[in-house]
Length: 347
Image (tube, rainbow, N blue to C red; front, side, top):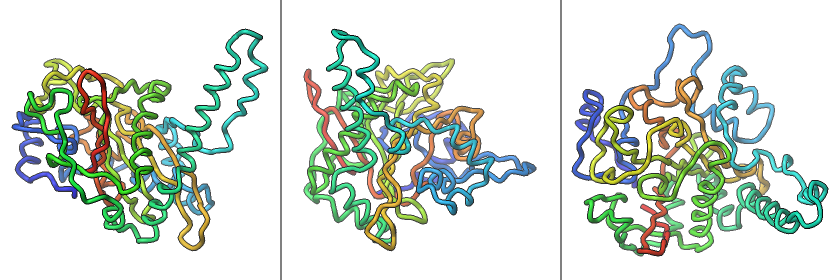
């Protein structure tokens, strides 16, 4: 379900860094183009370069083997780029009863406790999702990372993608095809919606001001991780920054028309990673809880320097197929009129 960018388009991009496309898609926008170029490196550096496997290893089970497999200098630099939207370890969460001791009578105790409980419930849904999500996560590993296992969990019934916030008028095609699909399990579809909305609501806490819109945050790429088969989604925000001849002098095709997304330092945080809990490959137990983290691609950080190809560092794009085999794209689109109506479309 994932196509490669044509060679001619890659060469055009590398030579000019400027596009005027006849159409754009959710996964083939200017910020998502692939190239044969490799990430920049310093050949004389005594420290090996970080790899996507290093990143995934640090977000996996805290075992002696996983810790020792990553160079300690690289591990420290990678961890400095993790901006967790949910605490990495379930043991780090605080008790909501402690809220009482910090408030006086009449200071909204019940409201604060309710907010605390809501956040804890959201945290738990990341660490230990509903059973259909866990089943899919185990299936991904047990299948040996076979993306066909994911495809078989999808209802084959096509669903037409209607106009999305005026996209038809702008001749913008946001999805790979004029139709999408959904998982057979409604709980899986509901969980995808939950992920999009949680990222939007918690992003500002780590400096990511993101909105659910066709210009900013509407899609992710579901993959099965290299080596382990772990189920994950790499989300991309800030997909279509507005054209600015000083700070972003790049034409991105019809889908950029009317964009209100400003190109600024928040682009450093456009890559958001969700990882499902990791099941044991030999028992029925689970060796690692789920993860939701923003990956900071600031220019002085190791993600920018080692994991993002040099030719697209200005866009801060980490590519999903560097993390594993991509199964599908997941889109969360506002297909409503005056009243928003967000729906999942799997391509």
